[in-house]
Length: 313
Image 1: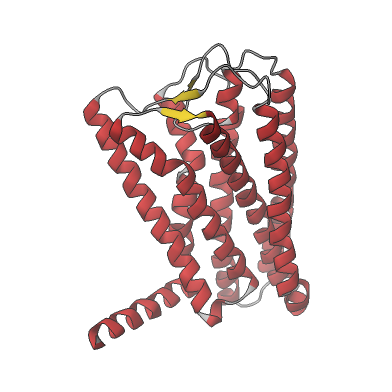
Image 2: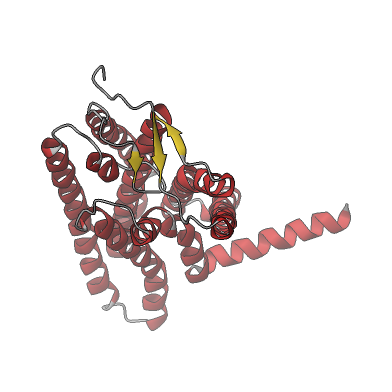
């Protein structure tokens, strides 16, 4: 860290140079953040207080919602404020913290989605052994494994990035600090950084994707053998939301990380990054709420109780 940089701060990219558009984007991001935060917190509340939802599936869904709420909170509020006050400055410490948190949350989200595929596989293909295989202890161990390995993965990439010198430019061509953008403005040799980043992303992405794919191949082959169509429909209703979330996260994330590098930022780059960092955690509660009957029923009961208590008061 001693040869870190001659720069003491970075400049983030703005969404527009026009003041009217800056204000518009600020309020748009604020609305997206509020909607996403409330949606994820609502899932956390429902799956916590409704005892019928105290199952491994909803345990992981609750953890995913908490991760999504944090994921949104890392970049969107600051981007909204920066656009509103037209201030793009971020300190070196703030940039390092943002890189660490973004990578950590993305890692935990992706691995949690992989664990959720395992949960669906056991529930559908081995229902009699489900309470034993997916016991509360095992679920907690899986979640802790996601967090611990995510911390180590993130600490390595963050430390390895911020050992570099940034003496050519301090303009980060993105609306938040991310590793690819920082590597492009470093005046140090970044070959090993890029190599480690690509290899680790390919290993993590390909490994998790292969596991998820294998799980759903077995799930669908089992579901299609169900004699009752209603059982098939119920099984598919718990799998389709998960497949949708995984597909959105993998496609958007892969496109952002493996697209050809550009020397200067553009609105297209920012929009692509929004699809990776903002849209998945924003859409997760909508996808799960609309496709899951138990979530909708628990939400209806919660709203009824809330209105009843309000009327009594």
